[in-house]
Image (cartoon, rainbow, N blue to C red):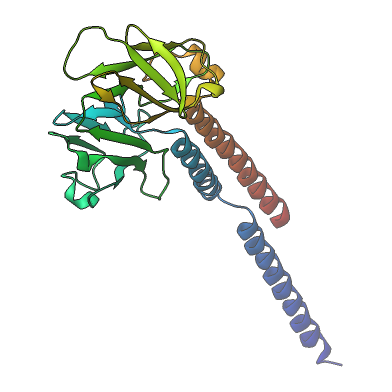
Length: 275
């Protein structure tokens, strides 16, 4: 009978130890299940990052100076991949018709390239690409040894805007008669060398070219028509903050608030369990 108290004491000590270990295990599990704010925000930023820049790449076009797609031999032409939001780092890419891009005189990892003098070998497809492989829309530059080019905008024209295509004769700056064509069909003769399209729509998108009697015919170039968004209708400044960037900022702020709330709730639960 004298040995009973020590046995009971040892048994009580084992229960306390097991309870402590159980509480410690619960705290450890709770700590693993409650994410830290930085972890949640980092995860959400990664997800938003991919969607955001994929969308931006889809909406982007190379910027060409001067703003047209056709050029005479030996002109000076620059192609730029640039963004105003400070996030995207674009690189200029090209697929030329007659030579390898490495022989174009352009640095293949640079965001821009100036070609002077421009040659027929520079004719081809140009686009912008980011570090993750996201690609912009491509534009086709045509360099001709002939005397006629069609001056059309290199950038997309927004629906509802007006656009003027000009048939240019290298030999003269005076007004001349020109015939215009879209997708191989005649659009008629213009006596000033200009084709004006008012209130453009998607139906005006297509391949355009022109010809001048006695001078020749221009190459074909694609006129791109883009749908106008409410943001584009009300924003005039090229340096205005993109609505997609504003969305990204609000998502990050919201994610941080949610993560902080979850973290505080986790701390409260752990304190309650300890008590």
